[in-house]
Image (cartoon, rainbow, N blue to C red):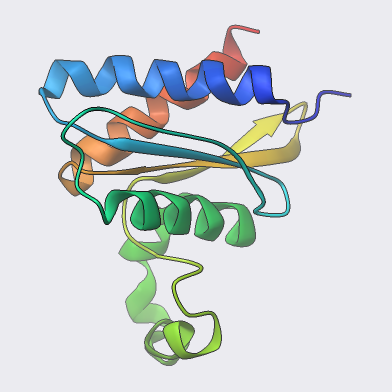
Length: 137
């Protein structure tokens, strides 16, 4: 059984940063375990100071809801009361904004990745690049 380790989290983050270089965007990457505990965080020079918080909150949302934050954002209108009340229930803990992905191994959630610093699409693409590390393992 593969768990989220520091070594694995670092590889995932490095892959996401490599993708961010293609966009020429300074970004932050957070990788959390299945319970949303921060395992690894890194940022490139020039990344905004709020990108730590947004990357971690996206990873937390993806781990908690076990789906991409892009899917969550696309479907938030189905239950607006939940999404508008979420910040008062879990302040700054979960951000349903594109850039977060759950990380699965052998059909089991082992963690999540969150990106901050790019456009919604750039953050999502970088998260996908990080998640690909698990496919190549």
